[in-house]
Length: 178
Image: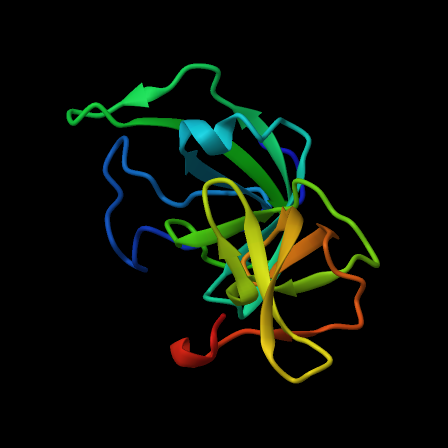
């Protein structure tokens, strides 16, 4: 027995058609959509039920709030030995006909406001240190060691090494790089 409100995504028989015993006439669905996600072991370690997520339907045309409701404790291993964890995200919406649609899910693991950040492309990463190139008072480019904090796809937080008044270089002619 389903709880109201319900939606009827379609009828499986046409007018005048005979209905055989056991044939499904129609399905009723609840307007809360469940999104099934599959994540790597590395990502699974960062996630937990109850986390708020953004669910991106139709390549950015519709971004809705959701919540992780379930996460597997043990992985599913495929024939090649790759491990994935499944989970479920609940999305409350009035969307119609999204069964089987592919979505992307964004989870904010940590957030900081009012930080000093540079474009990720400006950071020169090495195994033992991170650097950015800045234009110094003489107009030449020098490398400055920095300590990186949070990184997203576009920006890197600078915890140490810059004051915020420097001109950071993203791309440079290799001959000008000291």
